[in-house]
Image (cartoon, rainbow, N blue to C red; front, side):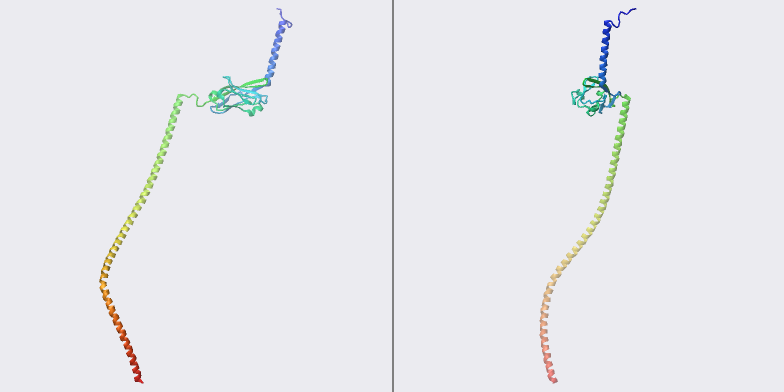
Length: 289
């Protein structure tokens, strides 16, 4: 068999030149892509509903990404989760507004980390971290798995068992609470009964004391009444005695007047006797001489 085409055949030369051009273009694209590359963790990022999560990726080799165009894209909807360009945050999907933050402290080291706050089950999925710096462009995929422990499928018998256990625990708690409450009420009633008994004893002793005081008071009243009766009798007798003494006093006054008169007479008689004694004394002296 003879080949009709050779290396110098025009059609063969054209095909070779075309293939060479494609190879050169692919090489140039490879060189361009090698200058900018994004690296992301191979394992998915896990989180629980309500937590904050950080999706990490970085440039390799490391370079300052402050002036780069960085986009985090939701893979299933191709919507912009977060868009950063030249130090500013641009438009994003409505459901992520106020919940995303590009961690700018890591940009000088080539880190393109994105924080999502209060994740929900709908946030689960793949996210594309895309960066464009000048003519270079690179992207990488990051997977996020958000679990909700309260939404897992549970068998009906487990639900029934959980309900029964909950009811039993609730009943036990209520019974324990009522028992404690009843015990507290019994202790309180016993304490009140003891206080009432003490008050009864105090009132009984007070009543006995008051009774004794009343008896003493009655005795004293009787004594006072007796003394009052005696005084009244004395007063009456005194009234009768005073009435009887008035004529006696009048008679005594008369006797006193008579005695005064007799006293005066005796005084006069005494004076005469003294005078006579004096005269007798003089006569006696004369006779002696």
